[in-house]
Image (tube, rainbow over all chains, first blue to last red; front, side, top):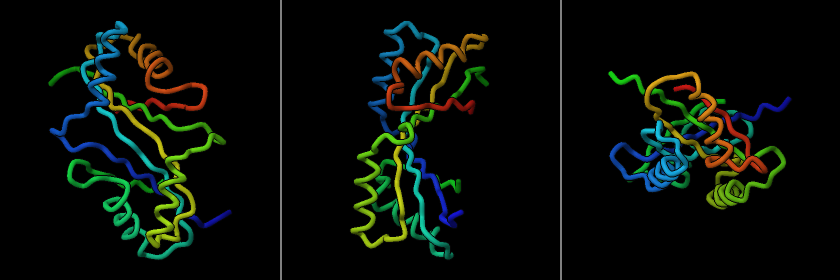
Length: 82
Length: 82
């Protein structure tokens, strides 16, 4: 049993930011006859496995999110411990 | 208060399927000095808003997942009611 930590980072667009991928999927759904669908918003997630322990893991994950995984200008992220 | 249903569909690659995006992010993390990170797997999620009710919503969501949102050959999906 390893003592590796697992965290999941969910990245989504901020409210009000246009989501072209979601809009495109929504249009496709309507064309396919699925007219019950009102809206689609898309997002990404990343499952990170981190070695060892230490209190600075939370800080590192936060740094990694804002530097690499998300674009803080238009995206927000949530870190969830798996 | 609308009675629209919200579901979130999480799409991830099946185990054993190479995740080039995850590998690339992992390499970038190492280069940036974050050597504690052991692995990165990427995935997508979709927040769907569905009008009305009815028992066939679950079936429709399932159809939409396998037809449009995920590629069942290499991906698996989980539907979660929000």
